[in-house]
Image 1 (cartoon, rainbow, N blue to C red):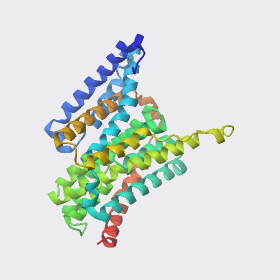
Image 2 (image 1 turned 90 degrees about the vertical axis):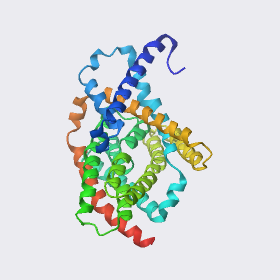
Image 3 (image 1 turned 90 degrees about the horizontal axis):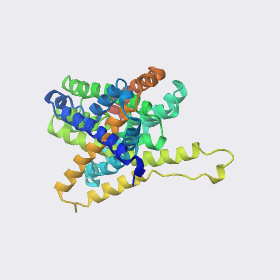
Image 4 (image 1 turned 60 degrees about the vertical axis):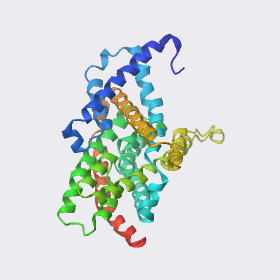
Length: 345
């Protein structure tokens, strides 16, 4: 079993407690104004968890904590695996090589720029810099969640990274359609949709921004965005290798093992299975809904374990880093989109 027999009941109470938070987050996400803004239950979940974690956290029975930790670790990894049901390899073919090139280029460049600038110039610890960069590079809060167990970072670092996604992802969601309607970008709606999918943080943000322009923009945005989501798998594998090497001591360097994140490999396997079209659509829809709930639970638990005093100690540096990445995504991303469409026209 996941918990020792003598503490199983208390740990399950903690897990049930997190479940109630997740139910509340999903319920709140259905409010019309929140749905219109494209705010996902994941974001609501971490906000609710952080409110509780910094007000009533001392009232949480200590024996319930293993259930909360279980949600931040084991359930989180399961959620990443099930995320593969949202993707098919056919989606990649639908946007052609231009869409693939935009996704890969933006994901890789944003991650590398963010990691380098965060560590070298802002003197952030590697975990905070990587988590912040991953949130901007891949798929927002879900990417931060997927990266956290590989780095084995503290909850407050993940919460800080998620907060940057909330700020700049939401800003992008409203800014992009406004810029398109103003005629500042001389491209058609479908190409602009690729730009949206290749640069906006959250999947929900990309969907909202694309739909605000046209159906063709929304279609391109979603497909390119989901290709970007797939980049999480090679990134996690690379981070797993990097983490294993980084933690190896000089004394035992020749004996250290490289640990690959098993859930990243299963994510690819699930996406491949989903691409075969052998699973009935209602079953796939069930797993995607379950995945949303599991990831929301993980975000709620992450918020509960986050202390504002630790975030305050980091200061504004992650926000400044995220601002630089936002500038790269907005300006550099459009240049990359135009270039790739010219190369693969």
